[in-house]
Length: 304
Length: 257
Image (cartoon, rainbow over all chains, first blue to last red; front, side, top):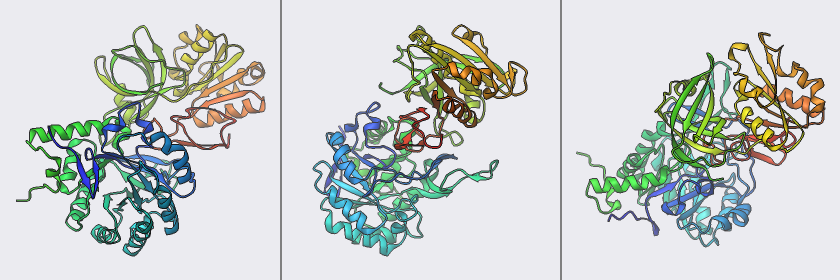
């Protein structure tokens, strides 16, 4: 028997495999394919104070070893989540985290406050790094003072686990990580998508309605691994690593770089059963390497 | 209907013409109920150049052999790789996805397909006929040499043809055919699948004749099962996912149609 449970600053995940916001709906979309309870945690679709229709079509473009998206936080608002979705998913025996986004600090605060009382929501993931909304999101996450300000403001009202999702579209990710740690974040998750774009040369037009969008998939994995490792060496709070994880080996690489848990994103679209395969693959790896506790992998990269 | 991921075995790769082929893929178990208009998501290679799955319309189902038939037009790297598949090769698919066309139990139904958009119409015609309605096919292509073999269609209903070069049937677009002109008044429902400009022209004609019209959209999607929210279409009730709430929509639901 191996121990797969990890602790993210006082909250225990049964295993280190979570799902990334915006790639896993509310979990229900995957019920035909897997048992959601087998996962360490899920982060549900980005939620804002008010309903958002999101960006115009087209919102997606395939790119080499990845994809661009510009969904733009389409969601029905936090009240709809609380009244209509939460009752349907609260029975999941896994850590259900709500990804919270906004265009003003007050929006984040009000949304977080509303989520405080949901018994089966152990935490929120503060999205200060969405590249796809004009008026906000990423603008908080790319400047240290605003990242600190929004984290501090939410920390004052939100009682449970506060995870802050970091943007890779910055000069020095460790500055922002240290900033939000100081502002009260219980953990940091990284990386969100890299800002990118694609052009259709034949049509001489952008592939996305928004021209630019968020790049995800294995093409960003080396950047993500580097940032997780840098942040691991800069902060004490646990790191939830993500960025192009397609299989168990990728997941283990993120843990070796310093992640306590990982999130699987784009890979869910290609194989909706990939998350449970990653859990099994981590177990296989541990057995092959005679590792009995998954926590021994965290930051376990050997540098000679 | 429960969706699943399953590895099928290619049993036949039947070349129809220079652009089109029909892939027969078999399941080891009996197939779930599959309805006309539904699609599959095919994992081509998940490599650097064809990273995402490819949504492909279900052309026909052979329940005796547990086979799904897929009409493939070679247009890009993904479909080119599918065209190379040989009997015995494996094909990883998520299915059955999406909703279906309406299947009334009486009346005349015009099925208008253009290019590879004819894919779901044969099966739809079969279902309509079995349920008591009368299907009429109208198939458009650039030229006779890339048109489907009409034999199976003629067993189910009458078949009108248009070709842009006039090599077979009426010269021009589907909207130039008598079935879309004086014939339209006799129809109770129009179902169409094909290039966007063709479907818009068909929808406009049906709308002005006050006939119910269903279109099958093929918006770009990453997942196919409602998670990515990339394939949205603007409807009177807000954005809807083409993959789960479509691909078939009544034109009266859609904005701008």
